[in-house]
Length: 191
Image 1 (spheres, rainbow, N blue to C red):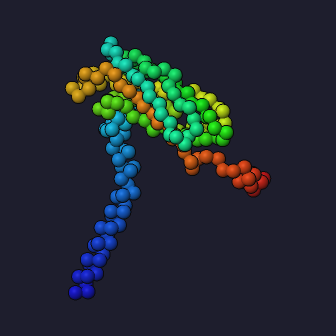
Image 2: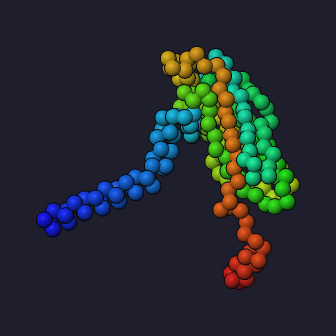
């Protein structure tokens, strides 16, 4: 009987450990799934635009939001552009730190309709890295992208002629600067 109880306890412990492991792995696995499939409007990363440029025209609109605690103004410099699928384009968003402190922000993004995420490719984007702005500092931040021409031949997306690229900028607390006394201590310790 004790052997059977020990086996049951060991099995239950393994199940609990497995569930805990899966709960920690679920966020990175979900992110990988979304990046691979474009699920939920997740855009793709690319290293180069395709060689073929379509004659069709797609309108790409831009939307920008900020979290309430960020203290930044954040907006696209153009509300929309016309692109030919396969054509590489660069657009800019302006961020202005309206606070009296240095703040680091990080952007999340998606496209709508969400079914177009797999066909919206970014070559470069300010959203790939956190952005730090000092008090009153302003920065124009670029996005280089293209719409994959396969958008036009996929039966699920062939009717799409307008895509909206949306960003939400959030404060990144762990990257904010520590107080000046902490910086002074670090500097004196190095010397």
